[in-house]
Image 1 (cartoon, rainbow, N blue to C red):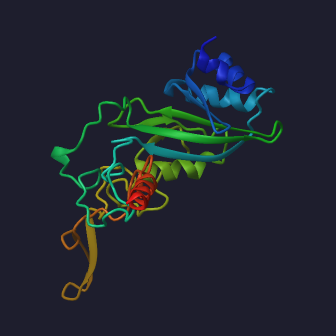
Image 2: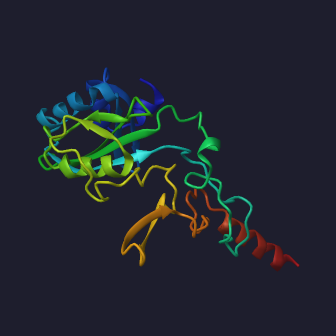
Length: 245
């Protein structure tokens, strides 16, 4: 038994043993169990998690999409800053703020899109997070889970609308938040933060017109990724240095 396997709870170890052929990995962080399965086994694993008497995850609480494009990259300097904080005038070069021809290609992420579901077993009072990465980055997709958990219906529509992930076998896969004629998927990290078009009323044409966005300059106003924030360590170091004088 590996050191990592030994650190897992009995429940996580049982899942790892039972799903060994379908599993990519099993992790436990802060008491939360997460398993990652192969995309081709997405539906099969879902059925087993619901129907197995020892698991009995009869309820799907949430389903969401994830775009791992430039995952863990940050535009903000979080290691060499003072206690005064971040500047709000950073000109961003990250996702949504670059020319498409010059877009970054993160080599450390094997698959860009993923789908995550959160399951609940009322019978065993237990929760589980299940994740799978879509095999195709150009046309990401997974099998629909509506046949297993009907509550996945509108969740999958939302993921399709915002991320462009297609769920094969979904009974009514169409947009749910944006307009039916909307172009693009807003939660993709390469989607412009200011949008592709802007809308105004044209008095001469007496109708609403759509035009390319020209009036808004993209800027980074909120830190996108913060890992270990060094502001507090820096503030303590400056305070000690000031007291020593």
